[in-house]
Length: 342
Image 1 (tube, rainbow, N blue to C red):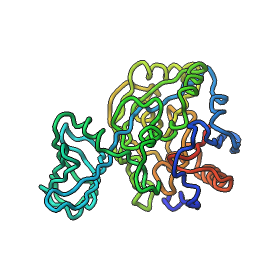
Image 2: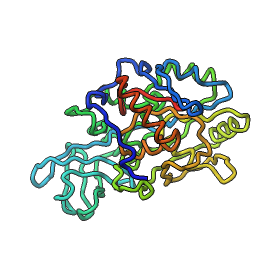
Image 3: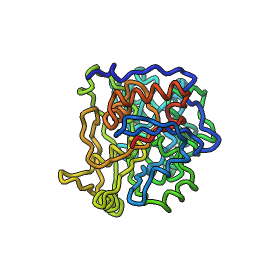
């Protein structure tokens, strides 16, 4: 199977550049895998598809202000550092621009109280940066870091409102460099209504570079999604297992939730409470063992996320639904509309 089999045409004007005034005002395309049909709806009706026997699983990761703009201490030249993964208290893996020209030992200043030293040789896309600051790195990052909006949002910079809107209302555990965007549609009120109707469980997967890293191979089977840290506690694992036992559905909010749940299931089909690294790559042909339904946004052509959705719903059915969404002028990607796959 080729990655070119997962392409589709998308007019640029359908790529959402900003969130809607109200989080829960998004449109929602509902896909029925049994009948191979879809229905135009809105997110307000998400709860109508949930029963008391179901469990809805959220990813409560919190986005950090991972984009840093600094100046080379020696020359004053502009340097952009995009934090990708924490290695130790001082060292981060990062995308650095212009990374190919920065040699080991180069110091980049981000204001007066935070600096970073490039500590490895140019070559790979990811560089290692050792940070030095007065006091807490997290506090300094909160002061000078910028919300890391995806590159298809064509704004000069993120706005103050992005710090709130590019974050789910239930975000709790800091560590992600991108939002689990399917959760952006929930408000506190809709979440309260959902909890009154069904059980809501939470997991944590810190969205990392693996989620949005481009697929660079022609053969889908050769693509490997980089690992991402996750955690599931015993209370939520038990709630999810109980739902399966009583015949309820596990409804995952977002592809990162799917990846977490499918990474933590044992050979007997039991979800395990654990901390770990998800190294799972989900492509068509994968047999899902935990997830029964999925709420997700619309994803980029030729992306690992579109591969995952196609594995869950079928390639032709998924791409047919995407074509319908384009024809009906749905809004795409992070700040866009959503689809519920039942």
